[in-house]
Length: 109
Image 1 (tube, one colour):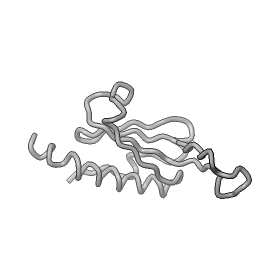
Image 2 (tube, one colour):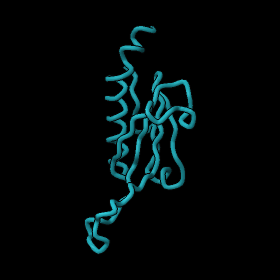
Image 3 (tube, helix red, strand yellow):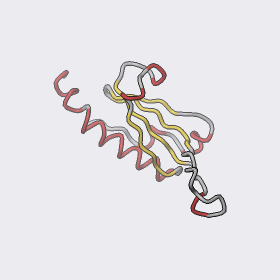
Image 4 (tube, helix red, strand yellow):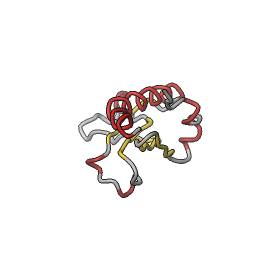
């Protein structure tokens, strides 16, 4: 079975400049550099309150593009901003596709 591979997602340096959009057998996805908002109750002088950048992957059903797909039809997950995080995203995307799209793909074949 064909799967998304780590080499399909480029190197971490790519994400410092721009988002990445891809698709795989009916599943669209976007990967961006993302900095979660700091909660208002976090203490500003605590090292634990430092907001770190991460990679956010968002998936949605094709054929529509990200900008016109309603937010409630998208699923997002965050991973470390690193090449290891990209490897985790590769596993996540393949697992997500198997759980949500594979049966649809099998029936259309």
